[in-house]
Image 1 (cartoon, rainbow, N blue to C red):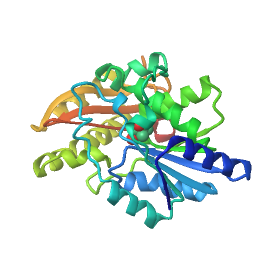
Image 2 (image 1 turned 180 degrees about the vertical axis):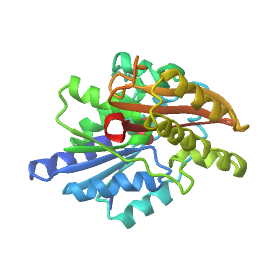
Image 3 (image 1 turned 120 degrees about the vertical axis):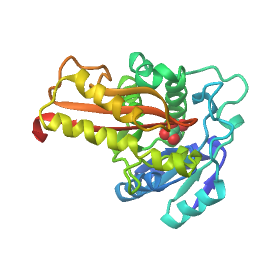
Image 4 (image 1 turned 135 degrees about the vertical axis):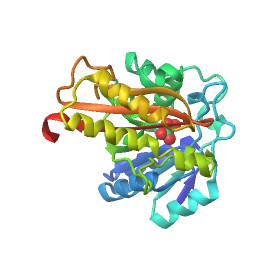
Length: 286
Ligand code: PAF
């Protein structure tokens, strides 16, 4: 596995592959790699000639009171996991290489960036869209792989790709879960034993909401109330940013449940903010 740290060298290497007709599958990450990331890596390897993974903890997607400084970092462990998986290139730029002095260009993906997580993390998706656009320009991938756990991120990036006519397939891969249903996330490392156990409530809440809908309860506020009650029944839940039913394209709360819907949750367990979601096709499920 080749490790590249300089954007210009990464860009020339990627250009070389592209000129030789080789397809690049790209997995952008912030490291602290877990099975969720590795599932994206395997898919990128299967579907492309060359696999590239980036590890970059992107400062501009963290708010001033968020966890940028303490975000889990394990560069050596991550590199070893990727080497074992047979990844071709690991791109690990530093902050000054990605945002040199004088950097002033940002990508804003309109309305949807302000919904759900965006309402609680102002500027977050501007930071995500900007770094992903820059990484896409460096890597020129044919396909880029993202996990469904960060559902809004996949919507924002797909919209950016469409609006800016970027010639890239955004591939959304299923959420990988622990045995009790907790979605894998680098932030799970923050949870102590009690909070780790308590966090199973998130997926339980999503599944119960899905069961209610499948059983014929289609009153949005009733399902939402049941979700909040389930979450608040767990004493370790210290706050709910949102929990409810949304349109998977617009991320708005629909006026009625019709076809595909997004059930999504963002909660705090102790000091840790966790998100999860499932998409259900109501017509098919009934
Ligand atoms: O999902 C993440 O890890 C990050 O938001 C991403 C896409 C790597 C951009 O920094």
